[in-house]
Length: 122
Image (cartoon, rainbow, N blue to C red; front, side):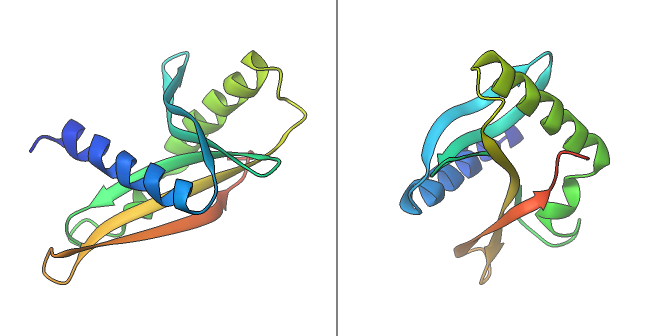
């Protein structure tokens, strides 16, 4: 399976995970000036911008480690665009990472939400 399909499946898992926790998915794969946010959800009165990362093995480290400074800046840029386009600049927001990895010999998924993984300062 190619990485795009795996990424789309991981986003499906993350969207379902968030919906089960009471979040409403507002956008998937939101793009602003060439930058992308995997999921934008509403959690109560807060807008949450979510980066989804999947790893099948630990050889390259934890999925969260792939959200480096450059990636965070891109997400923040796109988040500002999202808020401005929709007139939501006054809303509280948060930046999360959802990490999905295989466990138990590839037989189970582990889904972990890192709420407030970074802030708008990058």
